[in-house]
Length: 72
Image 1 (tube, rainbow, N blue to C red):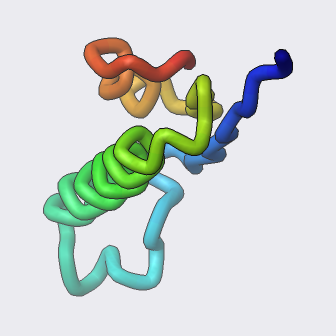
Image 2 (cartoon, helix red, strand yellow):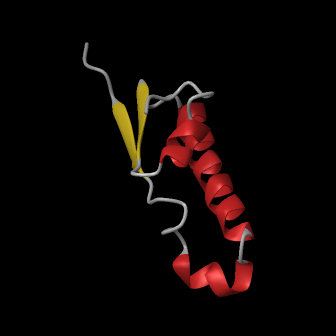
């Protein structure tokens, strides 16, 4: 049986949601982290995928996911 993978591309935290930078300032990073957590939680709860792969050039994004059951 083949495995079904969800591949989640994530920009670096500094490069994400740039249009909100002037409004959110440093809180932009928290927003991006929260959005990623929401996406991952939804995917994992759906039980549609066997594996989840987060792809990012930003090590801090990848380190967020080492504590979850996803692959980086």
